[in-house]
Every structure is written in structure tokens, then in C-alpha cells.
Length: 147
Image (cartoon, rainbow, N blue to C red):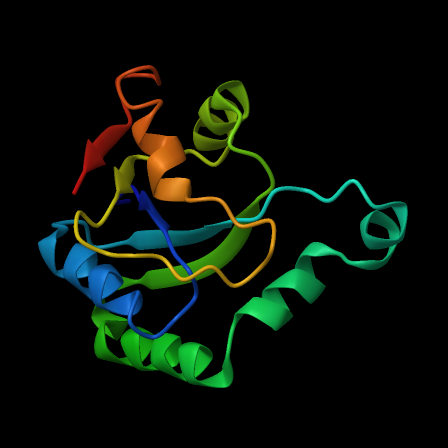
């Protein structure tokens, strides 16, 4: 059985950001791909926000209908590749947390677009691409960074 390659890509959950996802799929030689799209949103210190807003609520607020439809179109286009795309939110840019996150998610590759400007959609936004670049070379050698 072929191993699934897990690729983490920073995202702002806009349709424009999916161009890099498509490019990453095209460049990969793996038959099975898991694409993890991550948005940086530092955790709030407000008790009411911490109690009332879960991950699903945050993702619902960040992902537009057109973004979700574009993801479906990518699935359809690459249905022969055994593709999955899922979204997550990183709540900190802490170096140790990011290293553990990559290992815990069994990420094989981190792909960071070199010429993309992320849209700030929340007040606690942070640039995941920048945070990941700061740990490049400090994570286990089985995780490669690519632009």
C-alpha cells in the first residue's frame, strides 16, 4: 500500500490561495495526498471568546462558500490522486508548538508560496508562513520545506 504524503500549506482560506494548492498537487509525485491548510489566529485571552467559539465556528467564519466550492472543484479535478484537503487553525506562532504540531500531524512537506500576501481576516491573525520559515531546519529531517 502506498504511503500518503501529508503537505502543510499556510492559507488565508481565499480562492486565490488555492492556486498554490493546485500547483503543489501538480508538483507532487505521490498518488495519495493529504493537504492541510492552516490559518494563523492567536488564541484570545477573553474568557467569553474562549468559552463560546470553537474551531468549527472559527473555520465557518473564515471559509466562504466560494472557497469551499473551489475546494470541491479541486477534489473533482484530482479524484484519481486519492486527495484530501482539510483546514486547521494554529493558535500560536510559538516555535516549540509549531515543531510539535508538524510532528503530531505527521507532516512530510511544508510548502510556502514565495510571492503570496495573506489576507488578514481576524484581528488576531499572524502570518503562518513567516512563523514556519523561522523553524525551517529545526524540525526533524523527514519534514522538507519547499516554496
